Length: 439
Ligand SMILES: *Cc1c(COP(=O)(O)O)cnc(C)c1O
Image (cartoon, rainbow, N blue to C red; front, top):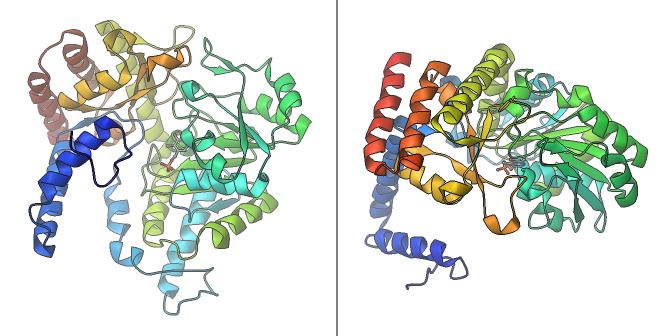
């Protein structure tokens, strides 16, 4: 096997792919050659995924035309440091407009009073919250990984950067939610500085008020990570974390929220906001990317107007797709006869060779999604589930009437064992039919 020069320490699977691409791109490394290679890769990607893909990956989205128009790379290459009015650089006063609009609109939309919008990802937003409210050696309590707890909550991620100890909150796999009766006793034993709820897969809302009451008993800060749920929170469906009692809300701006890449921190408490803001700048940032902020402001303003109908449409598509998948013979997760109250769906893929293998096969069939851990799985089962999100297909114009066709593509690729390229032709045809209908 050839070793990758980029990451000789990566897994054998990753090294094989890295070495393959390294060989392919090395033919012409002149400036013109590289520009050509990059241009072709971007065009092929856009054709495959943006134009023809059925994208069910839960952590992605597509910018609205107005947000895309506001997303200027020429602004991203202008360093911008400090608050408007006291910027280190001179001549950026027109950009102050974006820097004021984005936090104002995001705070209002998410039912907070203050928003920190300058961090480049939700991982960094979580690190800012950890840094603001916990010291090295302190403990935080988070959702188990198999219950959707994110890497940025766990010891392999940013809690280690802050030197924090991480414990898993008690969880009830059958309810697909926290073990609420066990929570107060657990928090009294562990006394975490921060309790993190909200996950990378959420079929049902948390009982935020109950968690907040248990946090208050031990003086913990309650962080709700709405990375995946932010678009629904903006649309006032699913749940309203700050209204229900979370001290702080973090989220990714590019998942269900549908904005440019980035992370936000929102709160109703000016003291908490000041601590997070001071960690963000000048703690974690010097110059920040003002190029994202215009698109973020436009996205937030659009969600304020159209968020409720967008969120309701995401939910309707998820309910319809979950029911169709169940009818096709998939094992769809749920509780009390209900598959989901969000835009997420989880399918148990153990009998399909696991979530990773099933996801790869679907990718060859032109349907893009990912594996996910399931709360009832064993550690040696890899990612046992498939996670689906309906946010992108909703924005692309798919309706509940289109969901049986998607479920049938998935059945053919995964249950019937049909060759993926044959399924792919029909996946592309379905996507083009929806494109034509929505133009
Ligand atoms: C995706 C995700 C994140 C990380 O978001 P990035 O913006 O990619 O850093 C954090 N928390 C949860 C729960 C997520 O699902």
